[in-house]
Amino acid sequence: MATAISTGDNATPRRGKIADFVRRNPTIVVGGTLMSLIALAALFAPLIAGDPLSFQPINRLKGPSAEFLLGTDSLGRDVFARMVYGARISLLVGLSVAAISIVAGLFVGLTAGYFPRLDTFVMRLMDGIMAIPAILLAIALVSLMGASVRVVIIAISIPEIPRVTRLVRSVVLSVRELPYVDAARSNGTRAFKILRRHILPSTIPPLIVQATYVSASAILTEAGLSFLGAGTPPEFPTWGNMIAQSRLYLSIAPWTIFAPGICLALVVLAVNLLGDGLRDHLDPRLARRM
Image 1 (cartoon, one colour):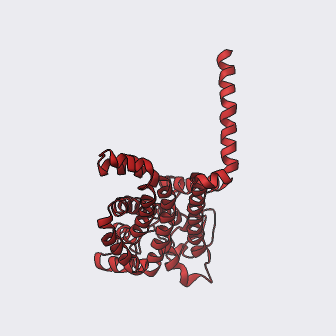
Image 2 (tube, helix red, strand yellow; image 1 turned 120 degrees about the vertical axis):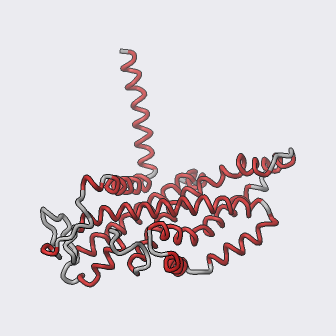
Image 3 (spheres, one colour; image 1 turned 135 degrees about the horizontal axis):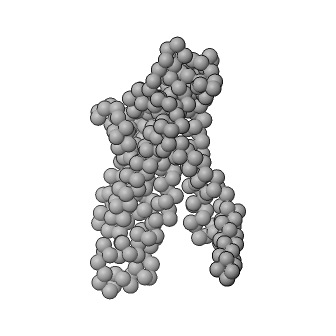
């Protein structure tokens, strides 16, 4: 009996904490829920959708039905299956670009912010990369290296690195002059140890938020490249390819373009909501104000 009572008493505060978190962070809950549903659909695509590459010319441009939930495209391919499998590529590109740009930008930003002798050279190099429009740089790299998912990820990651670098550098410049960092430096602590123990933890919260925005930007850029024919190969079931291939049939088969367009908007909305919620939750000044 004592055990049961104790368990119940512990469960009540836990439920109260969860309810309080949901009340204080609705954007995190909404964005996280949407992203979880999309990620689960992409993960279990073989179980909930058919073959996205199978085409049946006899069923071309058919509207939604019990057999084809979202209708078929101009080649008789299942729009629902292609939409679900397209989520895989979009999430893969978004997460990969966020990981690459965050890791590279963190290293470069820490180096530039902590070592003044390298700061000018590194930041002028980053400014030069930022001066090139991201979409043009991505198109140029895809044209030189060929269209593939790997090349698209690399092409989108390069323009994002300077943005992460500037964020990390600004944090390092504000933290490196704090008393505890000066104390560690005066005690003879090595620069690598100071960066790892005293400065790196301060960069984690803004980097988490930045990663969500980078991911959303990468998903939109990939869709734009695919729409222009400079992204993934046309046979790949990506949302950008679906929109590009269906734009000619908008007046007679609007479902072929609305489905991937709505999915693209939902993913970007979910990622941005998650990023805004994390920013409000991790910023101590906003937390105190709330």
